[in-house]
View 1 (cartoon, one colour):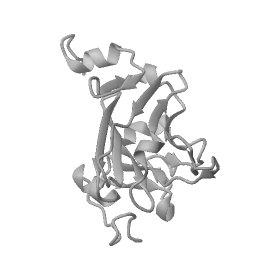
View 2 (cartoon, rainbow, N blue to C red; view 1 turned 120 degrees about the vertical axis):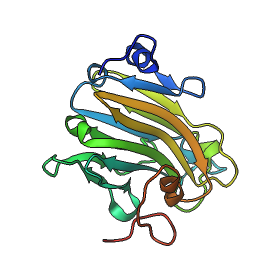
View 3 (cartoon, helix red, strand yellow; view 1 turned 180 degrees about the vertical axis):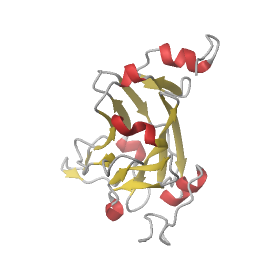
View 4 (tube, rainbow, N blue to C red; view 1 turned 30 degrees about the vertical axis):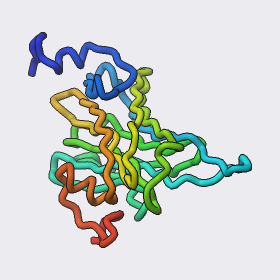
Length: 214
């Protein structure tokens, strides 16, 4: 499929942006832009300290809702040990893989670009493991990076009081493009609320934070 010069997608494919914000919320990475190998999606935040300057743990975690072309769907998150997702026809290869988190390095998800075409979409979110994170102190930033050197930064906006979850960005596979959109939507509920809002039908535990065992 070709896109006319007046279309938004045509402009998105040609542009070079390093950040997405409210004024420019979406861009498209062509195969040339994203290259080969793997894509990294990393959530980083400001390390917290006590009043005396000692380090203290945060409550922030990275997660991902995914949907493949064969109809399979699920969630990636440390909670419940769901840290990888296979793609259709990928011979069991982990198309999405979530690393363990570190207070200073953040948390990263790897996307295997060789099997990207087996996916329909995935949404990346940040959430508090034990309630609403201290968003104003953590000041989270999502960075998307490719081996080509292409990089994209998404800063979270101001969180309403009591927000437990933030859907940060969405990734859509459209023809051969990877369309990346800043969502920046805060929710007072857990991961199940985010899934329902964006059209995922998943079987969650009563607390809405992890999937039931099948």
